[in-house]
Image 1 (tube, rainbow, N blue to C red):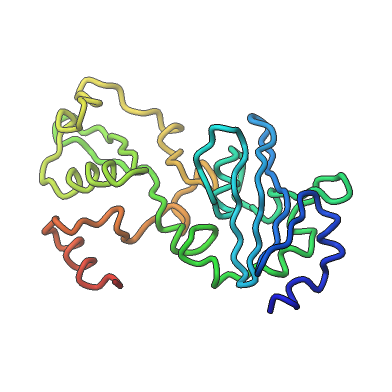
Image 2 (cartoon, helix red, strand yellow):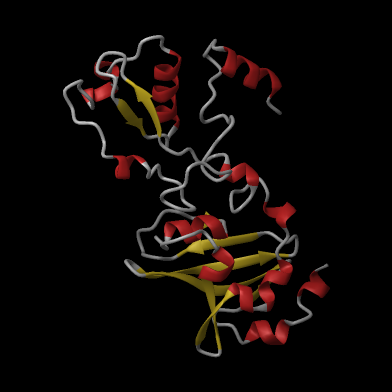
Length: 229
């Protein structure tokens, strides 16, 4: 496996930062954002087909090892998530997208599943913003769902029979607060496209981030009973 992996070692050696180890090779990589410029790192490609990037965007960065998908997102790259085209290596002093190099021949989807990246499991870990209508003022209020705590706030409000603005933590909303403009409401945080109306990237049908072992609602009970260990 390792022998086959380095069949094109001559081409790899022309890449900046090339380093060969036991069962892996490493090259310098980066991703460019119009707003933040270049974020650089070291891409390590394992004989198993796993890709991990050690971020070196700044000395104080504490991200550690990232999947290509997460590295692209961390760099602040605008637009759709296409890490194979957006992450580059330096070949003969030029930035070349991974998609145009031999490196992608070593990528194996199964070895990266469950780590993030473009896998189905990772996509279900992202939750778009949701709305709940106040029972008093009848205005839809936005709930941000990026953390487990935010997911729990939304979940408890959703199963409440008559949720009110004043029940939102930190008194974020009041019934006399203005409603969001229609144009703003259409943007719900999908990383694929801002005005997405719902896709497999931003719509979650159940995960340990938005289902709770201590909740007795039917949705959570069924999920915990059927979830894989």
